[in-house]
Length: 145
Image 1 (cartoon, one colour):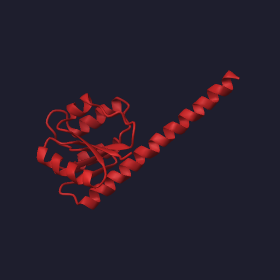
Image 2 (cartoon, rainbow, N blue to C red):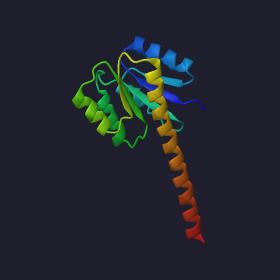
Image 3 (cartoon, rainbow, N blue to C red):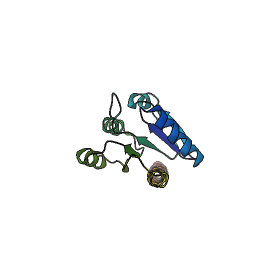
Image 4 (cartoon, rainbow, N blue to C red):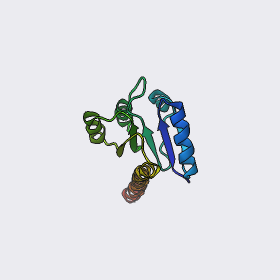
C-alpha cells in the first residue's frame, strides 16, 4: 500500500503541482482547499499517511487545524509548507508536534525527505498500536483463564 499525503492548501495551482509531483514519486494523494474540508473528510489514518499543511489558509489556519486534529485524537503527522514562516509560528507548531516546517520554494528532495520522515513516524505509530492491541488481547485472554 502506498502512503497517502493529504495536501491542505488554498492555492489550486500549487495543490495540482504538488499532487502531480507526489503521485509521480509513488504517493497516493488527497487534496483539500481548506482546513474545514479536511475535517469534513477526516482521514482515518488506517494506512501510512501524513498531512502537508499550509500555515496561512482562509478560515481555520494551519496551526488551528493542527490544534483541532490534536483535540480529536488524530495522530497523523503534519509537515507544514509555507511561504510565510516566522519564528513564533514555527516554535508554536513544532512544540505542538509538527514533524517539520518547510519554506516555499522547497526542492523536491527536501519535500520528499520531510514526507518520508513523517510517514515513517506514521508507520511506527501504527505498528506500536498494533503491538499494544495484541498485548491487550493476550492480557485479556490470561485474565479470562
